[in-house]
Amino acid sequence: MSTKETENSINSAKQFNLEGEVLSTSPFGSGHINDTYKITTSSNTNNIYLLQRINHHIFQDVEGLMNNIEVVCNHLKAKLAHLGEEEVLKRTMTLIPTKTGKNYYEDANGDFWRVFILIPDTRSYDILETTEQAYSGGMAFGQFQKQLSDLDPKKIVEVLPNFHNIDFRMNNLRSAIASNPVGRLDEIQDLLDYIFEREEKMRTILNLGLSGALPLRITHNDTKFNNVLLDKNDQVQCVIDLDTVMPGYVAYDFGDAIRTIINSAAEDEEDVSKIVLNIPLFRSFTEGYLSEAKDFLTDTEINTLIYAVHLLPYMQAVRFLTDYINGDTYYKIAYATHNLVRTKAQLKLVAELEKHQNELVAILSESLIDN
Image (cartoon, rainbow, N blue to C red):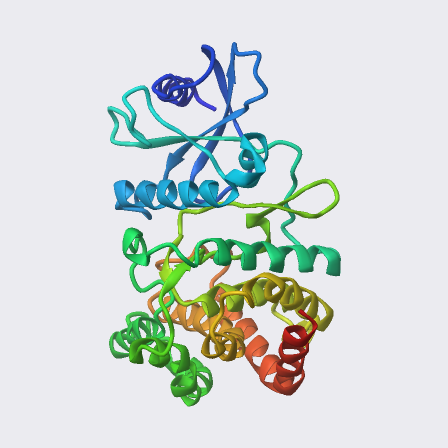
């Protein structure tokens, strides 16, 4: 960490209402979006503080973003208040205000900073290792949605507009096809045919939402497994990384979580024959999710879960292919055809999901009965 970066982070940390004097900051974690630092203070309390520089190039409405997080955290704390203050601090994220009472600080460089309390004695996993962990992950996101099910979506702003809007993604794809800036269309016609054949089916959730058949709720929108903190026994502790919390349809959270756990291979696996479904992880996650979510989900929402399982890898394939057609201007790539490889991998996952459709539907039905 450069001297200037150290000075900036220490000065920013000093703007917050922390216990004790700020002594130093050091890089923490491996996040790809925001820069995170652990703050060392002179305090003898058990609180450990994390300072984050918000990536305002991605999250351009910082005030809206931070208001979302504060509203959600306060709502969760109210839900858990009966457990006592110590337990609440373990089960929710806690924002520390600045000395002037704001929930973020803007420095002289135009960078935005925030501070959370680090939740102790927890762990997260980038890759699921057991069905027990899958159950806990499903339970965590189901519980998160249930606790927020009575929070008015109008209190939350859409910090990333159209994030899971398939019409928006398909319109971007069509625009890329029309301009074909680097001349790649001829080599991908089979992929485009596959995508457009499924377009109408993939609009099912959106159509239901637009018709009023699906309630708009508060959703996480980034339900990969490492956004769940577990305790030493792999039991649910807390859902983290609330930057993408927005109004949405609950099935999107379920579908994106399944996309990241059911695939036996990497997201950019070149040998698509290696992409097969991990059905036991699907079953365990689904059972965990429905053990909490069944308490508030409508029948229509439950019926859309299987559509989201197909939609989210499909939509990710559309995004990868759009970027490939445009000349790789959005996603970082390691080689020239990286986005094309990613596209084919996601579409192979869609094909596997279609092949096992009846089995997955049966598991969903069984999980509802068992819970």
